[in-house]
Length: 99
Image (cartoon, rainbow, N blue to C red):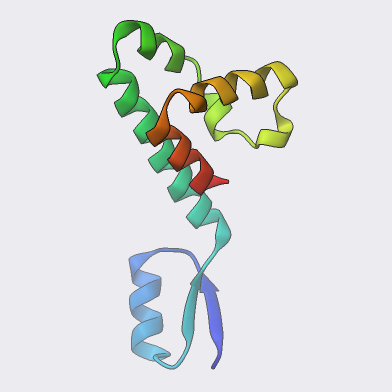
């Protein structure tokens, strides 16, 4: 069976299904990663709103740490990220999924 890599446009998906039904659809990595990062950032925002003021303050300014490539972070940023994830299980699970 043949496969085709496309972006996640509904129009592209419908066209492939209609005109090439025997072809497997593979979504390109860029769109998958973008979707995961958007969901991770949304979770961070929701948690920031629901946590107590002192806990929420820890999440303020953490967007870059959570969305960046771990290897590109400086050691002190990696440590701060580790501490954020250690005390926040939902965020840790989502971050591990991203990685």
